[in-house]
Every structure is written in C-alpha cells, then in structure tokens.
Image (cartoon, rainbow over all chains, first blue to last red; front, top):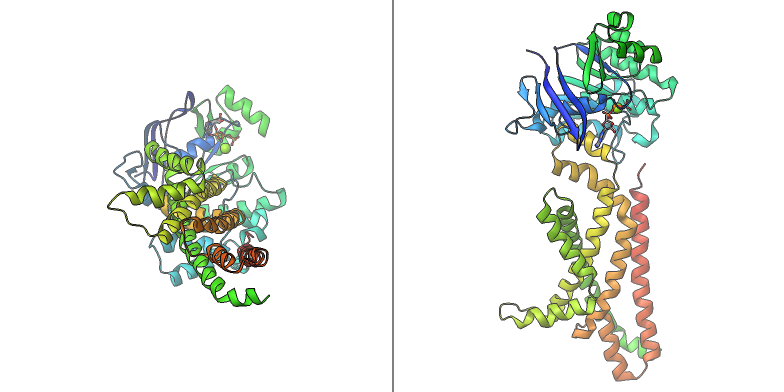
Length: 242
Length: 214
Ligand SMILES: Nc1ncnc2c1ncn2[C@@H]1O[C@H](COP(=O)(O)OP(=O)(O)OP(=O)(O)O)[C@@H](O)[C@H]1O
Ligand SMILES: [Mg+2]
C-alpha cells in the first residue's frame, strides 16, 4: 500500500484554482522532491497532504486513511505526518527540549521521562545535543531548522513533509540542514520535499515532480527529469534554475 | 495629622474592601474576557455576534449606568438579590471583561499563524494549540495592556461608593463628613490608591521581565 495516495486533488482559494487536478502516490521510504515556479502551488499541494489547507476536491490517503473523510480523526492522522516549514515555526516560549517533548507528552504518546530521553537522542542526532536548554531565539537559522526537524521526528512520523526547508537560511547553514535530511532519507523515511535545491533533488530524490499551472506537468527520476526533460515548460523552468 | 492617624483603622477597613472587590472582579473579568475573546474568534457566526454585542454594549455605555442597571435595575426583579458589594463586583467584572475581551482577541491574533500550523501539524487539536502555544505567547505580549486595564478597573471601584459600598473612597467620604477635613483625608486617599497602583505596575514589569520572550 502506498504511504500517500493523492487522487484528483483540487484546491481553490475563492475563484483562484491553485491545484486543478493532481494524482500521484508515494511509496514507503520513497523520497519525492517537488519543484516548480514560484506561485505554482507547491506549498499548497504539500499543505493539502495534512489538511492544513481544506481540500476542495479529490482524495488524499495517508497510510490508507482518507483525510478528506470527516469520520477519520485528522489530529491522529497528522501525528503520522511530520511537517517542516520554511520559517521553522518553533515555539519561542519553550526551550528546545520542551519544543520536542510537548506533542508526545500532551498527546499521550510518551511519559515525560521517556519523551525527554527520546528528545535528547534526537537532538544529538541533528547535532544539537548541547542546545536542549536553549530557547529558539538563541539559535541560528540552521540550528532552528534542525530543531524543527527533530521536533517533528519526536512524534515518530511515517512521512515527513518539507516546504523549502533551506530557503530562509544563510548559505553556510544550508549544508547542515540538508545533511540531516539526507540521513533521514538513508534511514528509510518517506519524504516529500518542496525545494529549490536542485543539487539535493538530484542526489537524494527517488523521483522529482515538476508542478506548474495546477498540474504535475512531468515526473521522473531525477537524472531523466533534469537531464532529459520532455515538456517545454519543464525545459524553460530548468533552464532558469540550473 | 491627628485626624489621619485616628482615621487609619477606618481607612484600612476601606482599603481591604477595595482590594477584596478588585481581586474578585479582576479574576472574574479576566475569565469573562477570555471566554468572550474565544467566542469572538470561534468559527461560528452566532457566537461571534453574541460576543460582539456584549463587548460593544459594555464599551459603548458609561460605567455608572451599568452599575445602576445591575444594582437597581436587576434587583427590581424578585428573583435577583444582589447586595451592593456583589452588584459592584459584578459590574466591575463585566466592564473589565469587555475590555479584556478585546485585549485578548488582539493578543491572540498577533501571534504568527505559523505557530498554529506547527502545532496542528504535530497533531495538537485547536484547544491544545490555544492552551499550550497561542495563549501563553499572547499573554506575555498582552501583559502591559492587561495591567493598564486592571489599573482602570481598580480606579472604577471607587465609583461603587455611590451605591454605598464601604470601600476606601466611601470610608473617606464618611470620615470627611465627620471631621470636616477634606484636604487631608482626600490627599491620604489619593496616596493610598497611588501606592496600590504603583505596586500593580511593579508586579507587571516584574512578570514581563520574568516571562520575556527569548
Ligand atoms: N491562503 C491563501 N489565500 C489565497 N490565495 C493563496 C493562499 N495561499 C496561497 N495562495 C495563492 O495560491 C498560489 C500558490 O501559492 P503557493 O504558496 O502554493 O505557491 P508556491 O508554489 O509554494 O510558491 P513559492 O515557490 O513562492 O513558495 C499563489 O497564487 C498564492 O497567491
Ligand atoms: Mg511555497
């Protein structure tokens, strides 16, 4: 069974049809990168996958459960879907450690001790074991983003969604964050990554989706999509960014 | 000077009454404000309207009229019996509640929506998001305006002397009518109010420093 299945997804904001008809499936452990021009609906697509945006039409199945079905508890489904944002969105009134333990403890997944232990392990993994007691405001952008990744991982998600996780970072911070993401991919995490980092997509993705005009215009393994694009719009886009 | 020393026990009683009324009314008022702010932001039009009507009605009418309405107006029904102290507490609470509602609403709305998105995407529901993420941040931000409203409400309690509540102001009036020393007594009252309000603002800046957003 696919980890994520998207069937004829549509999303409009009022009269503006952003996602017109998108269908795709993401298999367990697959890493999918999403590329496309600014304003083409990449973020909107990603945000429909955990229903941060209300879906206008079609279906999204996460691990078999249809998130558009009101009978399914969206809060439970979201626990399986980690999300990492361009601007980190760490909780500034809590320490790094508290950022990581809040959801597992309050949602009854782990006891406080166990959550803390796990959080410290995750912080070590992203190279920030020493920052557990720091507040987000005391961290650099790259450190914040690694904490945000660890915060999502603290819920043991089955899927991780990333929306341009490095585009708000100073160039010298990008490598650390991409490094953490590469490790995750190697460990078999299912990932969907909206990115402008073509190098990362080429190296890590199993498949790249090019979105434009509300549709997936083209999807392929990175070598093919970057090396031998089939559609004019893909070629035009790649000629600008590569 | 002698007059003041002789009146101190009376003024002390009055001060206790003022603080008693203020303490209850400000807590009630805060709860009313919190509920009204949440109704105002709830995803249901009717609830928004209920809160909006309440807030506008209170903010658009004088405190004294509200006090008379509650003490004389409501008490004219046989099933209501509010003594003047409780009528005063209720009036101050409702009045402060309407202003708190607007302060809290603005505070909640000032928090970046990315916070809610992060919380919800972790699986927290909307009330957990409010409780753990939004309100703690909003309150820190609102602390100066909340203090400001608390100070206004404390001063409003002195109007309760009109319906005979034996608060600090009322005790002062009684002492003046017995001693004919309005200058000293009202000066003493002013100093006492000033000191309480000064302590309130010290408490507020202490809390602000303690909970500063890092
Ligand atoms: N909440 C919203 N209300 C109205 N319009 C929106 C909303 N969110 C996004 N849009 C519009 O939807 C379109 C797609 O936006 P989206 O953010 O998904 O693009 P994107 O591909 O992620 O772009 P970028 O690369 O700049 O991040 C844009 O035209 C945007 O203005
Ligand atoms: Mg975007």
